Length: 452
Image 1 (spheres, rainbow, N blue to C red):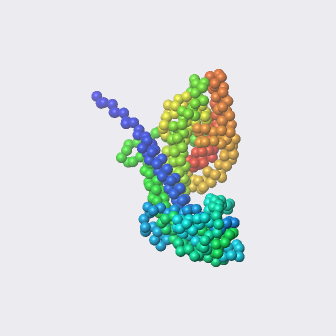
Image 2 (cartoon, helix red, strand yellow):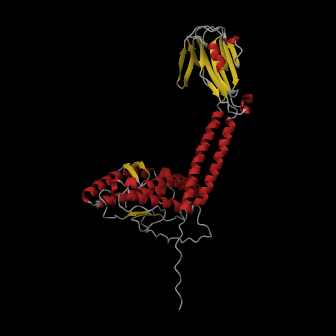
């Protein structure tokens, strides 16, 4: 007697937890890499804004005081930095350009804080603080006192100094605590000058290059993770393919449905937003992956006319998951059964969505159907579903939101979900997901303008 053949092994899910995690990490790495590359671009742009001498410059702004001197806040350069950092202006070079707005020549100097404090002790002057350049403004701390004992140019402690109707100082940043001082050359009262500040930072271009390289490396790592997370089942694995979906010729290939799972709790809907938070978090990452992979599929369709099967299966899984969460929560409130964390079909769950795989897609339609051809549907959907967070779990302002709210109140009072409202809610979601699938390039058939 021949023994019956053993049952076939259970199908192995093509989208297990490991592959989903790898794909999500790849998407996050890619998004982070794009942010890093944007920062690199900003650094390259900033580097291009230097003047002919290599300085970043502010505009000229007027600084004045009725006293004898203007003094800057302290510039403290840490003592723990290595000595080579200060050689030949390697850290940065600061430049101050001053033009006297009076007939008197102006003096500009940068010196050690202790020496400048000793010179200005008992001298009436103003300490400049909180300088803003857009819009321009500054604050001062007045220090009462009399005139300086000697003109500033006679002091020997200045690291750099210059005087005249126009005065310019350039100073290689050095270790220690430093201040800048603007005075009249003869040390007299009423100091007024137009000042322009500049800085030359030679290492900025190297920082930009380093950030660019880091962004490219992270981008490459993200692409590799996306590739291995989204590729098909390896040849060494045995995957049982589901039977093909047969769709009647008069039906649109995006099949969405939901079975009203009565009896429903009168009050559970009030806290479903809280219960569904774990799903919301996972779906946020999955929709990031959906968006990036749809872009990948767009280019694949342009070059091959085919939607990569592994990406298609993943994106259909995201739509299934989204519809199940929406059916449980505030897109329908059609069941109290907690949705599974799954990209698979889950035939036992009362919310179902299936999209048969298209063997061939139009390359030309891929260029226009997601924006131009879908515009009429987008306008209708603004009325039907309004605006909101996500596609299937929470929306407000549209007809769907109003109907679900009415159904929730009716459920609270009667314990029953109004059947006509339920059918209309399912029809609105059916319309929405058809358009999403079409705009995501998953089908070429134009969505019908109907709820059935």
